[in-house]
Image (cartoon, rainbow, N blue to C red):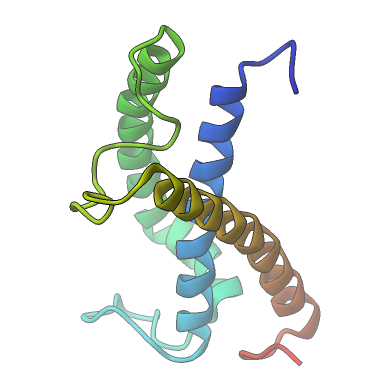
Length: 144
């Protein structure tokens, strides 16, 4: 598929972006449906998902998120580097499955991996769509 970039690296990136988009879609829609983490900072109660970004940057929350996520990326980069050097780690596998795949046949594991990548791809489209609709309509969920 690729002579330039290792396929394991591409699969790792696709899984990471897909997993992030699954959480991002849920969080984006939840905010516009009125869900909040309490206690909310002063002035954050009436924010929409679109206006929350700028408010969080001004308040400093986004800088803190950038710091912590960057730190996590350092550890992820180490894991990816080891994977590319032949450690045997599968792309996207951090050993956090909670035993869900124990006792499953290889065919069942492959089926679950296929389901995950399909859901990741759908989530990437869904998140880009929900952000686009929210900006265009400037209204609440379902952004019609």
